[in-house]
Length: 146
Image (cartoon, rainbow, N blue to C red; front, side, top):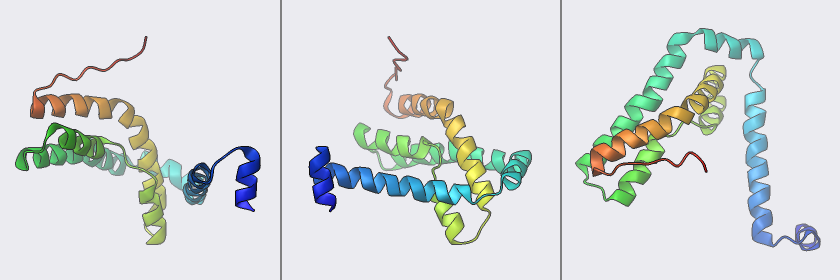
């Protein structure tokens, strides 16, 4: 049935698999976040310590550890930049899944994912500019538009 549906809509099977798996992933992530009570979620944002510790680890400790690994292992530019992008990126919903699986504080995880996503809009380019310049001596330019 899926092959017939793909053929009638003009999709090949690979496109169908990608779209279908991404849709399932979205439903899983959305479903897990949807189980958090809104009052617990709001309470986590009033808990400044948890959010600030999480943001500090996410945007200062992890990128610095990526920087240290690049220095220690003398990574080539293409590998070092990839490592810096990964260690400087905001946290994602996969941590929410682990928190749900192990029955930990899911509301803190969802609040932290939300906060790090918004903070990442500024912190990711800033961390990359700082650490790429420090390691490789390359000036990083960002084209912000036309």
